[in-house]
Image 1 (cartoon, one colour):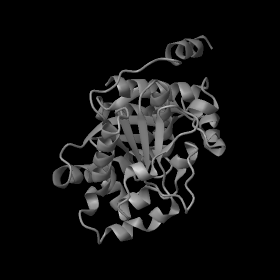
Image 2 (cartoon, one colour; image 1 turned 45 degrees about the horizontal axis):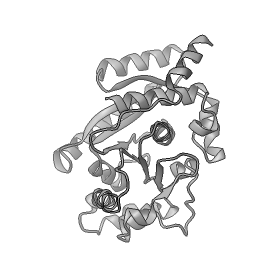
Image 3 (cartoon, one colour; image 1 turned 90 degrees about the vertical axis):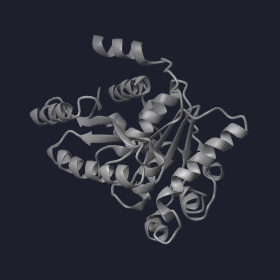
Length: 281
């Protein structure tokens, strides 16, 4: 209890440093259920609540990040699908998150499910998201809006053209890894795909951050997986661990992140610690 209280005092209400330029992070892992969307929305919310300007781009057809941020994403809404396929600008689709100041979201709709096929025949199909982001950054500057500090791109659990667009648009990759054995098997395949992107499409891309999620300190397996990942990626793995938490799981059903649903919970404090580490790197 004393440790929890100290963490709370240290983290809640803390201001974080602004990066020198906009940092664009793609949150990716082709394995499903590792906490990609949960990590994206909660770290974005933690950074925004610490005073930074943050945009979440949801390119997962399920639209779970849009749900968690309380942004409508039914089929009639203009969405990231229209940006990628119909040449809308990001300014046309970006919505403000109702619960957190400085947090914005470009929502995903079910139309994205067919976007992989539609992208195949388009010119410069891998670079469409990158161009849209560059244009949006210029649009904000020309309209006197504050510069974005962080852009997070939430990917589907696959390595198709949507994920390739996300890799081409970003300069950093953040990989959430569930503390279970199969997670390590999927990681090597993901890293091979990132190497191919670096070689052929985006030489600036780096794997900057690995976050261990769904950590259960009561099991030896979780401790072994965490130790293995830290041994192989000593500079990328964050010190912060995200525990298994009922509060984190419950929050999306109220269309919230855990930051607003239960800001003093262990899960919220863990994401605040991870966000602070990312901001200070």
